Length: 306
Image (cartoon, rainbow, N blue to C red; front, top):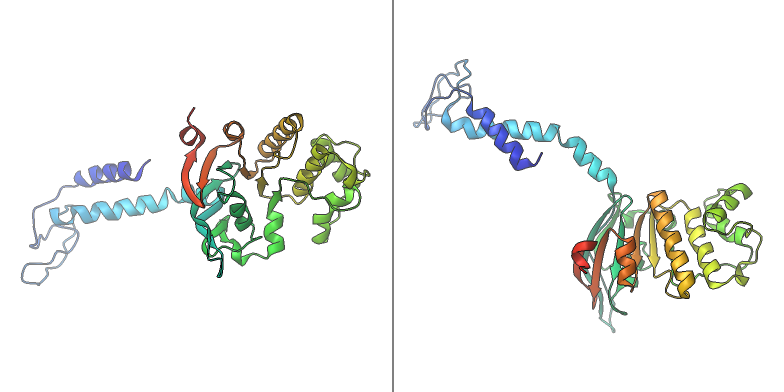
């Protein structure tokens, strides 16, 4: 129920109470002690009759008692489901450059939502992603991950919880399995061969565990980069145009894979793309940036009208 509707119903209940006119004078039958014009008061008399000067007070009191009790679960629910929030986020380069890269970017993402970031080259899209997981530090505003300011989180923990996949896959020398196990190893956690094989099967790379990571094709390497991010069990996935460096066939394949993984794992995702059709396909919300400033933000059907 909306607050204004609740207030209307509460006032209706309050108006059913019999009340007498006192208008600033004592009414001995009012259950609330009234002040007389001369500043004196009379003893409160037990009664259920409200004077008109206390009807509004009674309504407000009852409204807040109900609203603070019933919607509390909803408010907690919303907090629990709110995964990522940016508040007036910005970054300015120090002198001698003294240039604004990003200014006053704000958005909210609930668990499982996908936000597409669109805009021309140089608009500040990649800068925004770097601020979200503190590869660069914002000079204004804040980022909240499940309600916690990311500045209070250790960088390693933050980057595990916010996985990032770049335009090009940067893999470490060694096997595919060693690349996947790198993140968990940094947290003193071992990945079993079964876990590695299971992840690789999910991205269409069954049997690739012992392959040399540096000999893979572009599409294969990007799948490994995505799988490496997933191996850290992130809560948020940051995608910086992960299909832009691939041919059309690989692009469609990786796009379908990412969309499937995001939905299956109920991941919150921030996805940079130049492709508006891709944004319409994969996103729930769109944020448009131009010259470092937000020009539009909202549901896909509102921002990217056909």
